[in-house]
Amino acid sequence: MKSVLSKLLLLTGSLAVLAAAPVHASVDSILNVSYDVSRELYKDVNAAFEAELKSKGVPNFQVRQSHGGSSKQALAVAAGLEADVVTMNQSPDIDLLVEKGLVDANWRKAFPNEATPYTTTTVFLVRKGNPKNIKDWSDLVREELSVIVPNPKTSGNGRYTYLAAWGFALEKTRSESKAREFVTDLFKNVPVLDGGGRGATTTFTQRGVGDVLVTFENEAILIGEELGADKFDVVYPSISIDASAPVALVKSVNSKRGSGAIAKQYIDFLYSPKGQEIIAKHHFRPRNAAVLAKYKNEFPAIKTFTVEEKLGGWAKVRNEHFSDGGIFDQIFKK
Image 1 (cartoon, rainbow, N blue to C red):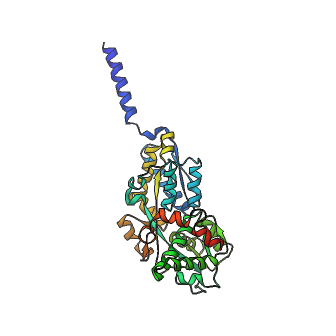
Image 2: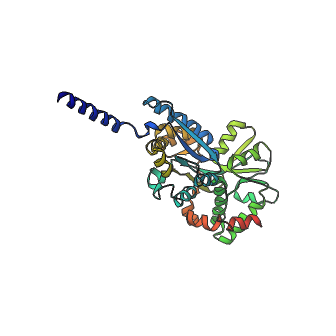
Image 3: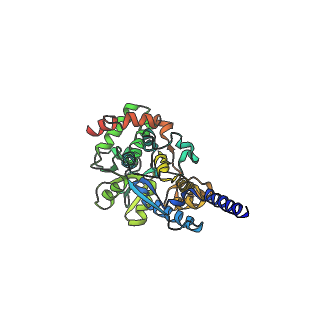
């Protein structure tokens, strides 16, 4: 009897240990599918997260990363790319995955700040000394200028540029038709549409095309660091757009791979003081107030608006402006 009892106790103890084991014990990697200009950010985030797991007894874990134009990346996930986590730069790309049944409809409630661990805004990068005297959105429609912008149909970076210009015109004219005219004139000055923000950066900085690159603040600062502050200047317009970057778990892949717990832990890490510090060092505006205050000199005050505040929300914008045959297609065709 004692022997049987001992075996039962041993079995019970073993089951308890298994129950207490982390859900991700059999998962040795996750894939974060992200947008174009976040490559360097997530390279450092991933290394720090892997190191933290190792310190907690989970060695040899790997976060794999995939980058491209935000909308192109969302379409890739919808088509079968098995992302455990998506970290995009605009919410419509995650809403697309909701429509496909891959992400929970309440993804905005799953993490703080409507599931956006950081934000940025759209600024101008000009040649050193600003030889064309570019100061605000109104300058970008001057006939002699060449403006470099990624494609708003495939890139969140380009989409934010388009919407920031539209919002600026609305602010000035209070007229949708005048805003359309303004954005039409701006895109007349765009000689090429790269698929993503990093491609547009290459066109402007390495190919030497264009008088101004319109891009995210973090990308503009990074260019100055990597290519030399003696080559470019950053110009902040009078008003720009809030470009909060949303994140979500891909529930279909999490269920299939058993990666839900570790994937959530990964996103939680983005909100941790350590994660927020890495975000700030890569020139994105962190949500953590203490970390933001530490880097306040790097982030000048700028008046911004959200898509919800000025443009009727993402669903309206997506349908009216960026659907096939929508306003952007009409503008660029013209």
